[in-house]
Amino acid sequence: MTSQVGRHDVLQWIQDIAKKRLTVANTVSEFKYAKCRVRQLKGPNHFPSLDENFEEKTHETILKSDNKMGVLYWMIRDQRVQALKFKVPLHVCFCLVPKFQAETLRHYTFMVEGLKEVEKECRELCIPFHITSVANNSSPTNQSVKTGIKRKLPESVNNCCYADTVAQSVLSLIQNVNISCIVTDFFPLREPTAWIKQLAELLPENIPFCQVDAHNVVPVWHASDHLEYAARTIRPKLHQKANNLMTEFPPLTKHPYCHQSSLSPIDWNYWTSTFSVDSSVKPIDWAIPGTSGGLTTLHTFIYEKLSKYADCRNDPTKNCLSDLSPWFHYGQIAPQRAIMEVKLWRHKYKDSVDAFVEEAFIRRELSDNFCYYNPKYDSIEGAWKWAQDTLAQHAHDKRNPSYSEEIMIAAETKDDLWNAAQRQLVRSGKLHGFLRMYWAKKILEWHGSGPSAALKLALYLNDRYALDGSDPNGFVGVMWSICGVHDQGWAERPVFGKIRCMTYKGCLGKFSVPTFVARYPK
Image 1 (cartoon, rainbow, N blue to C red):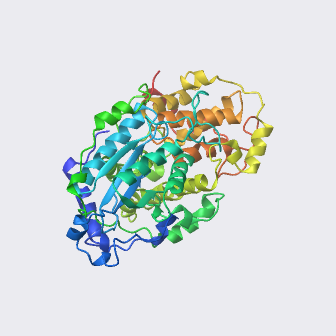
Image 2 (cartoon, rainbow, N blue to C red):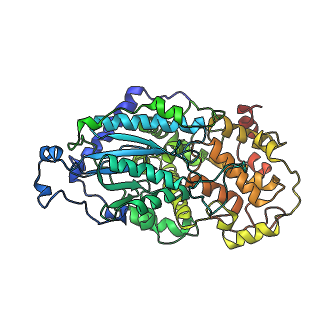
Image 3 (cartoon, rainbow, N blue to C red):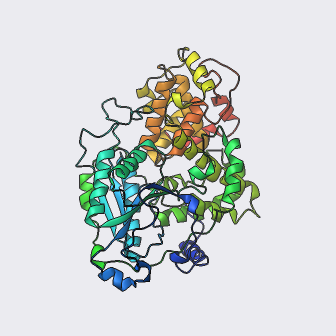
């Protein structure tokens, strides 16, 4: 869809957002951050001083010091430049990990193009940006992930989280650039959790290691201390705690405590040549990677789609969704930024704004809660007991029709709507939110090997083709569809048991199925 708003207007809007950040503080050192966003993982809860008079030192004295202690921000989930208030050299690093972050060329291209923008912004802010990788150091002694199920379809794929080699890679950088404090992102999935845990075990006791949840509006550990049952149980907590947290971001200003010699450019050609990906899943052209691309998409949503979002968001033939999930997933734009900008229009589009906030805030942070407090977030065993029981009782019900995985992957079923949805996923890297539910539920209905195999296939396809795959929101979306997570029991029926059912006939009553099908021909 060609934007009706001029490029100049978009750039001016983005510049206005940057100006808003200056209204809360002139520099990041003046900004009062929310301490509930930070938790200590290891070491003392203060930055180790160069000496007793450290705070009185000028930045010239610090830079000339032989002890060039610095802070490392280990970027994992939020791939955008964020402000850190330390009067010492600041470094940023990102570790490339095979399979988890980008198993296909589609994901790798989106991720790396975003990281290139991060490097450029870091350089402008006088912050050294480093890339490390475990691609050439994947020792077979790495720890395997034992909880949940294997999400990858081929049985030959080793579900290894590379905890040892990721931690060793980051530790080597810490030693090379003389880091005395580490800050990292929060990411509830088991692989990054294992990386962070392993690094904490390797670090000496005198180095502070902190974790910051800047991805969620309300940090997951602050929102709730337990696994929430449904949106209705976490919604009031999130709204109440967001009152003090839904604030403007601090300004991004040039970091004064930097050694110019550390600002060497990244050789992206080298890293691309050493990082193995499946090139059969091609990049897409509708989504421009990086923070600027994410903000442009947000601008388009607000000015061209928001007015009809409440009424048309469940109609796959209408182009009214935000399409922001890829940028949310890679942390290239903060959900909080999107929510704040959208809420400015509540006086005009109340229902649409409230619906967007429910999806981007409540449902998204409920997903993080589920994956954080439930180690079996991608398994039937992670579902509520009523759902486990009903799925087990109907696991061997006759499927009519029943399709092989090969037929479903190739979109060759006799359901033209499902086939079109599968083609949309494979070709465009996205699947309309309403159709994702229908798509996953049909896999449960058709898979002759039962619910566990259906769940495994749905997660595999979502992770492999969707730009926002391997994300808590994606896991929970599939778990809701197949396992009834965050839902309730419904009238019992064959195959589904008490899991909510969606039908082709029901879709015919909601939108023009032929119109959608025509967009994704065989």
